[in-house]
Length: 328
Length: 220
Image (cartoon, rainbow over all chains, first blue to last red; front, side, top):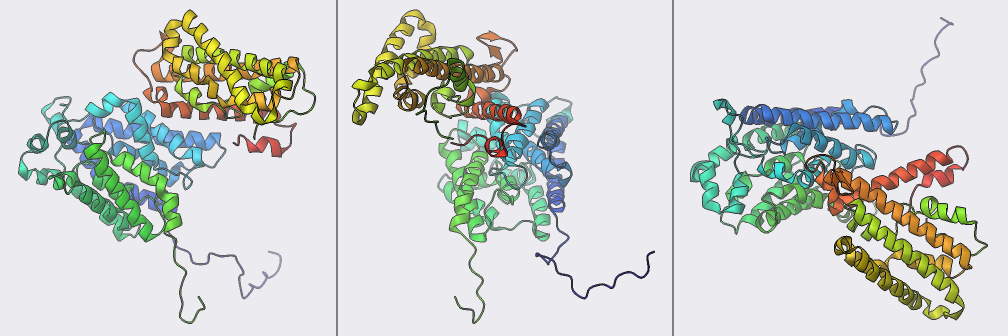
């Protein structure tokens, strides 16, 4: 309007970083959520409407708590970046299907408020928020969290649900034989793989968890160091128990290895650090399972390993970039 | 914020008592004696009993020290303070065992441990050994009341959430959030109430004090 526009300067001077990518926190988080969908859908299909209630309750609690905390802390609304949904979903996937939905809702609220927002929000939390929520629920609702297991696909026969025990729970209470009987004999490893066994909503199907993990690996969102460490640590710990394969295929190992041990915020930064972090989780899980007070120990193993992360980041620092001819 | 040393002339009685309850609340501001504050506060009544015991021990020890301060050699003052506290703790311990045996059965161990409570010996060191009788009495009273009120608040919070009752009277069936009755929940309760104290203080100081004082919150 007011004459000719000013000529563009030949150079644009801006502070770094200059390399840009279309990747964003929200993008990554929604990809993680999408990668969790197969095992979530399987959980709902296997355990029926109660599982859906638990998932909706936990997600609603997490998202509501995040929105509330944003308002109280006068931050901009961070619900849309999907991390609250991710926390709620991950929490729900680690819960027994017959936990009351309101308990899952309280767990989701606690996970976000005390696992994440109280530290300042996403990126500042020391511990995995979903695991904080689960530990809180184990302390608050010990009965529901211990007996809320259902036989797979019981709801198809128009039964509300049939409570049962998990393979790990049976192994703890009785012995290996009883656990094998529960999953259908020595060939039960196939049922463990596809996920026809009692367990937490999202942990039962190894194959579908792997499918989601492959998507994340293919997109470069997660790396294999921490998961491999978890499997190695647990295999090492349980190799003397005579039921290593049962330990490896049951419980929440696969879900935790790919979706919690790989969390950007609560895992070490460098690759060696991530590997040690994973091994630590695996060892602690085996330790708690075989000699601890709970049948499954991966929740506490992750929380303890989270507490080690600042030390791991200190011990495994990235090396200096070495270029040929540079003075070192 | 460490305990404020009081070398100069002491403020008035009312201000000393308010100081113990709010500005230098032993639990929420000085963060002293957190161990018993977590251990006994699963119910209001336990908190009340221990709080009353601490109130008496604090006032009596402070008064004893301020009266005897000229007789205590500075080099051995800490052992002497400890003996003085132990004398009063024994007296209170036996009185509680005689007059409130049911409650004493639950918190008796912690009544004996009052000997080692940081808040009491710190008030003897920073206040009672430097100030005359009357301000010392009110400082002890304020600190004891502050501790008592803190234990009552934590106890009420944890009993309501953890056991669904108040002072032993059930309000809701079952146990709503058992977590808060556990030791870990005790630390969370203290942290939440401490945050509430910080928030109230920040609001009160809103326009008057500079940002340096109000922005810091609590630091140990």
